[in-house]
Length: 265
Image (cartoon, rainbow, N blue to C red):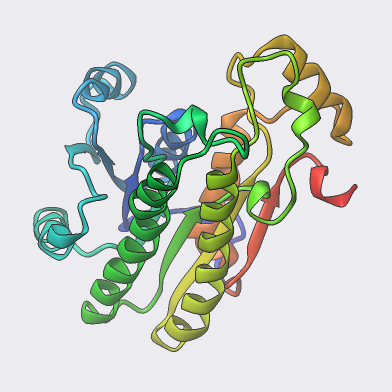
């Protein structure tokens, strides 16, 4: 058996991170890089390339690809091109957050069917289809162990408290809950199928993450959480690292809550 510290080591592994320059994705990219992995950050935004260069300062073994992975018709070719360039994917972490411009109007009061359908297509459908495509590649490459982490949310399992948003420019989201719930259930189904091929698949469910939200919301959310505060993105990244490492070698099909105890109330 490996030394316990070595179980978290990602040496000689290719880690593909979709949405790897977002609030959470940026920290996950750092964590996997620090653990010795070869990290391929995939992000649809050209602007984020500057942030990437600023943070990683041309370090070796971490790379940036400006690709929109939500366009599913060309997905297989994109993945084949990426794995040909960087090597087989040992792990996929999808922490992207694709959404339409009218995302903020997805409350129960204001949502429109067209917006709901579009967001389900570009977010939930892409998460599931991308995971399947990478899993098929992992099987094709006959990897002894590989893993997929799908970023979901506590709101994929629990109801949203609309009282938290009163007096702010925020609101509950009908679409978000549906999307994240779908991702969580697809993870269970995919894990049961791909396990025989040594592909582990898990859902990582953060609670509220501090991102300079309105003070009213932060206070209300913190008061409801047993740890009495919101999460920081690096706390989510630590668990993502665990899920792609050998430290979680017998974990698959799990819904891992990182919510400061929110779900135990």
